[in-house]
Figure (spheres, rainbow, N blue to C red):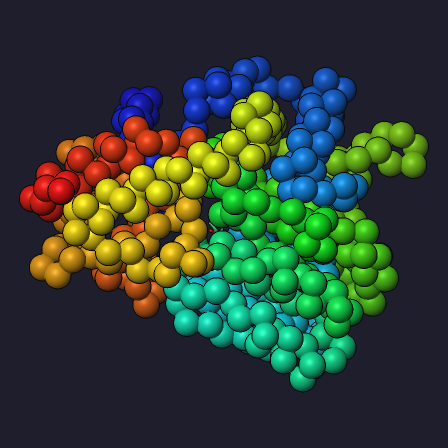
Amino acid sequence: MESFLPPQVLLLGPGPSPVPEPVLAAMARPTLGHLDPRFVAMMDEIKELLRATFGTANALTLPISAPGSAGMEAAFVNLVEPGDTVIVGRNGVFGERMRENVVRIGATAVVVDAPWGEPIDPQQVEEALRGHPGAKAVAFVHAETSTGACSDAATICRLAREHGALAIVDAVTSLAGLPVEADAWGADAIYSGSQKCLSAPPGLAPISFSARAVEVLSARRTPVQSWFLDMSLVTRYWSQGQGGGRSYHHTAPVNLLYALHEALLLVHEEGLDAAWRRHAEAHRHLCDGLERLGLELAVDARWRLPQLNVVRIPDGVDDADLRRRLLLEHGIEIGAGLGALAGRVWRIGLMGHGARIENVERLLGALAELLDRRLV
Ligand SMILES: *Cc1c(COP(=O)(O)O)cnc(C)c1O
């Protein structure tokens, strides 16, 4: 065996997204001790940059040392206890995973379903809240990566608050690709992943808890069932304790945090507004091009995500074979359909650094060749 040398692939799937050179370079810098004061100072900057990215002033904002799924699990295990009721919006794979999290805690999930490819209907959320007074939380996915639909996060969070429930928001795919305003919405737990629109490597889950959520956490009747994701323990490493020091919880993924720090710097150097605009422009360019190729988008333009485009596979085209040739002959990765959409759609991600006109052009050219179609 020899050292592994990965090929250059243009990542236009549902994540990971392309990681820019400065972020890769940051990761290759010397590893420091996870309690080294210089490293700790950088951790503080990460928290500050994350607050700016989530649109929040929440003190409890940090990256969990694990992928987006751990962000989801952390939100649920910290805020939900056995016997609680949680209203879960389910319009795709990730909404179903939220339900699974609730049930595994020993809580009751009241599911508000929407058809795949459509957003959660706030009116149905409100009906569920009326039907279940005392519900502990409302949970939903802002940007459903499995279907390409965007839900109205501001309205659903407001409804939760009006009914005295916490709002748990999955912003894994939306953060930095679409406006995310945790405080303006009134989100109580909101989490993301490093490898989508932040364009860092996978393996970290930024998360933020509101003051209201922290109160709920400190008033728990039962200990958090997960030792690793227990925020009351994790915080002792991520912020100053009473004695002014920090204590060991787990060994932080030091170099991965360098990468996240650099990726966040790039996001804020560009500016969130500019990044959102760039995603929207790349998306419009892709939609135009797909139309010129005679391909059809599966999601209504009113709630289409710019960073995740679901395209119908034309009749007679071999899904797996086309994606394999796109990867091996053209060096471009796109995503397959998930669950009920497997074999019926492709998922084209324009996430983070990937959301650029030149990438869209390259993909359209390759698709035209592989489908033997012309851009008309
Ligand atoms: C990718 C994704 C996740 C899971 O993140 P991982 O990093 O793969 O664990 C959760 N929710 C949504 C909406 C996602 O797109």
